[in-house]
Each structure stands twice: as structure tokens, then as C-alpha cells.
Amino acid sequence: MSNSNKFNIEEKPAFIIVRILIGRLGLFETPDILAGVESFLKSRDYPNTLIDLSGTAVIDSTGIGFLIAINNLVVKKGNKMVITGISERVGEIFRITKMSTFFKTSENTGEAEKFFTPGGKNQ
Image 1 (cartoon, rainbow, N blue to C red):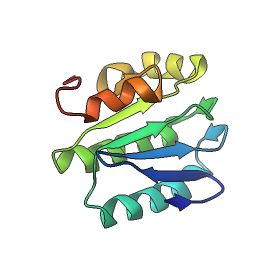
Image 2: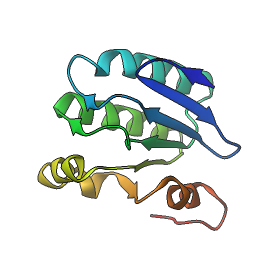
Image 3: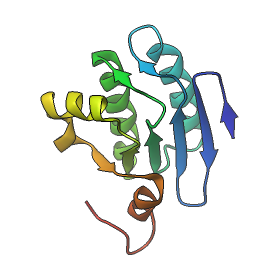
Image 4: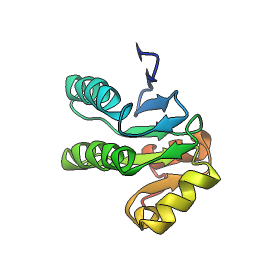
């Protein structure tokens, strides 16, 4: 498990959970989070990744860039990334930017875990 005041990472057998712990995922917060998460993922060869945004109420283009970067790294290794805990406001930003069609999303962590289990969702 990896912890910081901005995010924490929990390892599960089939995937990792990255929980964003801050209310705003923006220009000033994102570089530290990206560096920490990317370092952790690299050390584990970019496993299946669940991003939990349930603590995040605001996201800007830098935050979206963070999600795209992590998704690209994970997918490049043949794995999956799913985002859960999307607030109404963040969901609206995803819809406006068409990111809701780019990312795999789920209503909650339990539902998202199905993406990583054998015979689970293949979206």
C-alpha cells in the first residue's frame, strides 16, 4: 500500500485501487499525484487499475490529462483501467469533453471490480 496526503493505493489480487483523496484534481495538485501513481504503477508493471474519484468534486483539464496518461500506460501493457466514484459535477465535465465515451466507468467500487475478474465485464 502506498499513501500520501493526496492519494492512496491499495493492492488487490487482480488490480490496484488508486483513491484520490483531494476535492480538486487540477493544475496544482495533479503533477505530484501523477508522479507518485506512475512510479507505483511502473514498479508493478502497470497492472489493472481502478481509479476512485469519490473524494473529488472538481476536475480540470490537467486532471483529465492525468486520467488519460494513467489509462494509456495501463492499456499499453494490455491491462484495464476503470474509474468509479464520479460526482455529478465531474460526470458533467466527462460528458462535455466526451471523456465518458473514452473511459470505462462504474457506479461504485464493487461494480468496477467485475471488470478485472475472470468472466467479468469486457467493456
